[in-house]
Image (cartoon, rainbow, N blue to C red; front, top):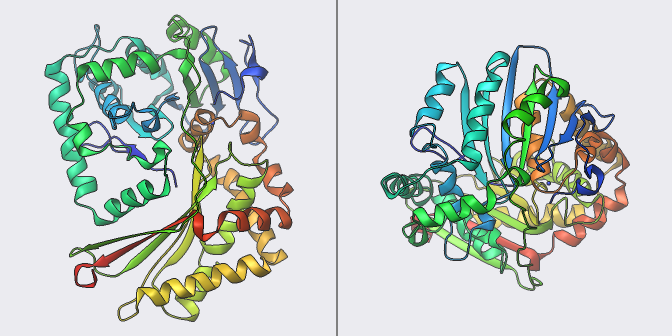
Length: 457
């Protein structure tokens, strides 16, 4: 799973590698990106800003999104949380707009807005009527290079972040456990640091930290514009050039992050809390992301995750919930859209009177059996059909499609790869599924977290 901190009402937050470069060298004219189901159109501005247009003319509405290729994994050492903090501060005004005016203008024009931070990207979006698109484009372009900050603005917002951490992390046992598991999973890579940051480091963040981070990463050649809805690339291109094309490029450099050393020992984390009603366990395995694995590995691992535990017909649910009555829920998940690494999860909770150790033993039996014998042809075919159908359902939600494209391009997945998703799913073989599953689901690559009632600690 890829955690994202979306902006909330209480504050301004808590919500694939520029792989197209060789293909797009000096190309500025809009063109169909690929003959795929989304009918996306793609072009690049002269300053390096990538633009994706996703036409959908069912309603006179558009979703306007700007994604920056920077997230919490790019936070400087000792400054954890600065990417997320800056996301808050982006709403605090420019030379032309006083603090808060951005949101007031969007609201006055009947729009909705939000922002979010993940390990690999930071994004901002507005959903407005088609005839209001130019307004939000002007607003977003203004704050891309024109943010104004001072300590009177920064200090109170830092307090908001600290309160947010208290309410959404420190006061949530499951979130605290997830945070500790991430820290144990990643021995060297910054994915082990929470997106919101460690409290003692958040407390030191200041105006200079925010502006340094902003000036380094917030520029058109480090950004992706995605517009979905009642518009075409021919209509959007002049507006993109007018508002974003005039902004100077910053000369972005490739992101450099430390690699994980070999993981040679299983790890266990236990957290007991009086607020926990029933014991549960979550296990994560270090896994390849779409960009870091061999071709087809991530799709094969998605299929395996679906078979193992993503539906009521899955192996884990049937064994632990239906047949043995050990758990009220059990499942697995895998989200490959990350720049460097991903994680494969399995999880379950025990029913009253059932020892969590018995649940874990049953879970391990299901995993070992599936790894030994493999799924049936019928299971594979059913999951492939379900994954391919996701595209059809997504077409009904332009904002969801825009998010798929923004997330993907932010972490190095190309437009062509997104558009060819149904074909890539169809091409996966049973041997591929089993090879990558057996390579990933190994105990030495795992962290198991136990969330327990206080009396069981």
